[in-house]
Image (cartoon, rainbow, N blue to C red; front, side, top):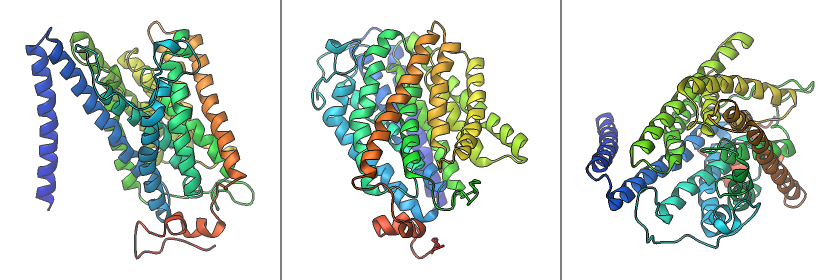
Length: 441
């Protein structure tokens, strides 16, 4: 069985490298051919979209591993529905809200119509087929939504989560996404967010913060004196695997956001983006490890894993406009912010089981500001404005949404359901059938 497994991995890697090599060969042989340029750029974005979609598996593994086994099915189900429910709504009208067209340039809101065009009449370098553009964008939308899943793990009703996922993916994320990527007012201001430190990650991180505040902490997270108690995840192997999957997926997220690889200029920038992404992730892990070692006496794997993600989030806004050494600095700061953010939430008695806000929210803001500090030709004032407005938009809208849900259908499961686990209480099926993981105390 192991030999078969390794053969499959070998052929998967070989096939990917063949496609990449063929694309580069085709580019070399067809310089100036608009048909070839069109094909190469669209193939590049398609592969990037697949990598970003694969990140859903990474999020599922990270969140499942960092939480109790009795909630594994619930977490996996939420990650699945983020993509499926949210993705359908993004197809129907979310994409039209995010990319309404030139008529709404510089505005706060616009709508370009329902659904996605199924054909393209233009050819050439940098021209994307509308279907592959949607595929890439819907993967980003799902990423923003699924960040919240970890922050509310173990206590949020599944029905309330579905409503949240639909609204953030179909409305909230597309509107603030339009402000920058759709040509809205932040873009006109000069705000720069290359691949979504703020547009994607801060939106998810601050939405998760709003939900966590209104939900309250899990049972047992804080003792009667308010001191935080460790509630260890059930499988750090899952979490480590998830982080590596996310890291790989980020090579679709960041390099893919160049949206083209045809021609020397595009190819050179894609390679710089890829290396900057790698260096920031490495630096984030190292600084998080050292920080926990210094302040808590031992290096913590979970903090180092989140340090990787924090570094990736921090570099996402500026990976196209900073040097390699600057990318390392951004990653080093991000790792420290992850540890500091986790401890800040404990001090404030806010329960975020996976560190979604420190990783995606806090480091999303850091990525925006770091762009103004290190990014060549970037306006620090515009970066600060964007780094405040987008998180505030996500936090305020999601706080109102969860407040409405709290006083209508309710957002938190019963005490008995929480103690037994949401797998049984919400779904009636267990991820680990035949094992007893819950307590009634």
